[in-house]
Image (cartoon, rainbow, N blue to C red; front, side, top):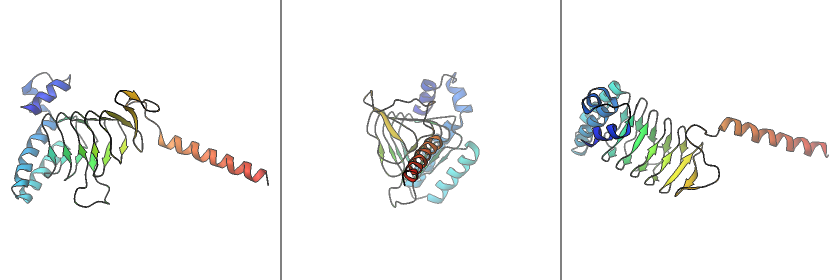
Length: 204
């Protein structure tokens, strides 16, 4: 089974298939999602939603039954993960705890992101809106991504910005630990603005 195999390949703490099957909430969430998604497609939507909500209660992972998920999907830890109804996820995707694949509340129809193949999304990241995150891309922990991400890109920050494309740095390269502090950046901007205003007043 690709779900169990993906855990064994990507989580060094996983010792064997039986342990993964019995002890990994993310595996339970994904397996039950397969059931609820099948029922959703067959128009048993209330039953599908009931299964997804019960799964959320037991695992802390909320996956809408309408979401489409490819093979080899791995949620590491998983608590607080939210995946919206029109989300599409490709193959061999890894996401960490606290990730939201959601909408902005401004769109109708297709409201949630499309995640390409071999994408990694760090803990606490928010990917919001009906755009695509390209294949082989990485989203840094805590990032807020509101627009399309090209293939083979690394995105970090709030709002998310591309710092690497096709293995080449774009601006400053940052890892999941050394992310920009948006509050500190805003304080710096305000300080500069105050200094500009003080200079303007002193010249009058």
